[in-house]
Length: 493
Ligand code: BG6
Image 1 (spheres, rainbow, N blue to C red):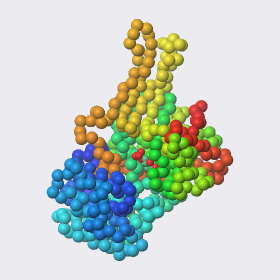
Image 2 (image 1 turned 180 degrees about the vertical axis):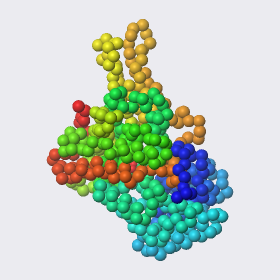
Image 3 (image 1 turned 30 degrees about the vertical axis):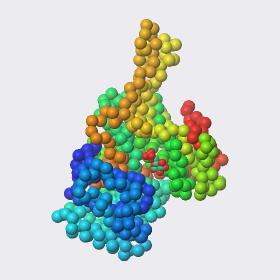
Image 4 (image 1 turned 90 degrees about the vertical axis):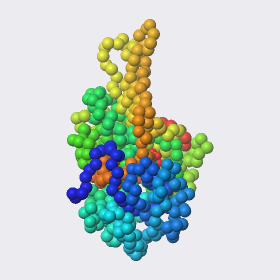
């Protein structure tokens, strides 16, 4: 459509046109923990138009007044906000229930009132579904039936932002995608993977493509292996029933870590626009070697935490069946069958209730093979490693080899370590959700995921999930104490 324009990647200087953000899941955790504070951040930093407003929707019986008072407990008026009228003072609550079409008519009426009152031109609408997966399709159907997803005016867009999970296996993901396309165009769908908006993850492309020194050695000639890992100290955080049906492979690896892998390993896109990046990611994920019975047995480890360090074991958590085989830790090795990555192992790992809260990408280079050093000295050389730290202290570390000061030739590690924040001269990075909300208003798909890559990722992991379910003896579930480094195993060699 002609009025849509992909904005320049990585720029947040453009203020989106006035918009109504309609949030479903008004009383949910995501709304109070992430969406509202992010909107506040955008508002306080003047990054959204002053006529941007918010309608919160849910099944609970709030009035606008009682909802404002409810949400103000969690989101105090932004401290920097010196505006006469903060958007928080103008939130409207509309009770909606997908089973009661009339309630969607009420929502349409509120949107019409805003359209006719607040600005000279019709307003844009961003529908944000911060709801459990089971409610997504019925809400979209209800929005569609009330004609709220239709772009009847060429000057006003309708965007739909949805949260993962996008299906639970290949079949359900394809079904969800087909359903979405029956109701709204792909270009208006913003599938959220909040990892893509983390500073370090956005920085992968800059590190790779703005630094000649890295891109020329970013392949199997120079790189020994790549490790992408995330460890969380937290456990289920009250999402016990959801997690038990999901498990860690579905919760973290199929989406967040695979998105990171694609950015790390893809070929340079033709340009920095969202379509070019998407094509490069899709081309990469299609080249990942499918798992076989053999590689599932030797290249994937799954485990579940038991009690330890004064923390309950997974099976002792509320609402978890005593015989649950759900994994809370996964470590796997995969290969990419293309020229760039031949024989380079990628190690992907994620776990809950670990001993640290760390996420990082480690690019480990091959050791120097020059005969310049004596055999004895060669043994002391450690491989150069580029670490892109996602958490804590988002930043970058490069480990080089250097001569230690002194009269003898002794070689040791020389570490360059910095955080992105230390290097920034501006106000600091917006929270991941603030960035995503802004981009969804700016038609910038760069940090969102597309259906096609999600489906490719499910193609890869659905056979693993089936094998685990059908053949638990062949693919055993290991254990590790809560608060530990994880189970003992080795995927090397
Ligand atoms: C979510 C997962 O997508 O990401 C959670 O469902 C996980 O289980 C969370 O805890 C981790 O996000 P972050 O930003 O804290 O690393």
